[in-house]
Amino acid sequence: MKPSYIELFESKRLIRVYEKLLSLLESCKLCPRGCKVNRLRGEKGFCSIGKEAVVSSFFAHFGEEKELVGRYGSGTIFFAGCNLKCIYCQNYQISILGEGTPTQVEQLSKMMLYLQDIGCHNINFVTPTHVLPQIIESLLLAIPQGLRIPLVYNCGGYESLEVIRLIEGVFDIYMPDVKYFSPEVSWKYSHVRDYWQVCTQVLKEMYAQVGNLKTDAQGIASRGLIIRHLVLPNLIEESFKILEFISHHISPDCYVNIMPQYRPCFKAFEDELINRRITLQEYSKVIKYALRLGLRRGFPHNL
Image 1: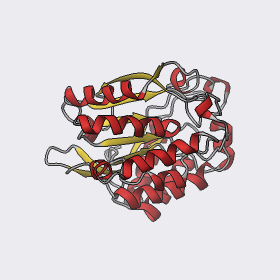
Image 2: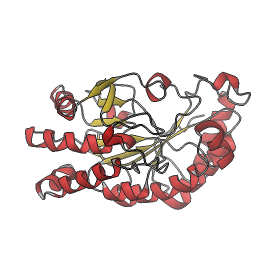
Image 3: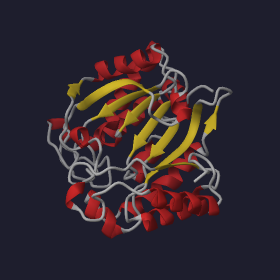
Image 4: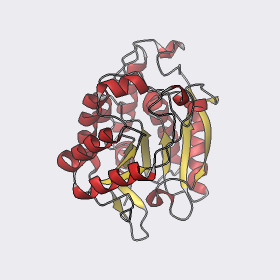
């Protein structure tokens, strides 16, 4: 399957997408926070990133979903900064402390082509929300040089609906990490009250664009929606509500990676609810609930 961004490029629509996204940086409204700082002049809002994208690392990643990893890995590019900055973030050195190197779009395009050249099955942009204009500009350089593999939008779920509609056709695979249901919980851990309200609208739009996950004959993802959900200790009711929404309002055939690997990091030790790992009992309850809802794809069944 030819990635949809090729047609966008050939029809000249991709450059118009870039121009519209770039205009949002002048009074930044790339995400729902709407900081309205002038990032074109280097000003920084909540995400802590100015005009240039900051890349922490890029490599063939073998720890992602098997449909992304395949034999040769997912070509992952980690961007510094984030519009959530969760207090338990396992990548806090990157997302909150901003570790990384300011990267010109020419360099970013070369990273993509390198990852494709070493056999990666996709380009996996981790935390792309706040650097979308830079990513699209780099695509405008990489596509004429032969970029042809699927693009993955690997985000935290707190996205601008307007922006997600604008980028339709650019990304083959959406992979939001759906975190919370309750505004009290999302405020406590990610400094945002309208997370669920925003995220549900965005999930519906992502699904409308790409549908359920599709794979090729080798089981490698080519297009579709992958939802991640990290189970948090003492908060499995949040997990239940999220899974209910996915089953009832997205699709029971949706690929849902229910993740058990939470561990307390950064400031999580200061919170009595999340200052420990989850138990097998907690994880098992979430898995069994997902199965009762009719969900089947993306998580183990034998717990």
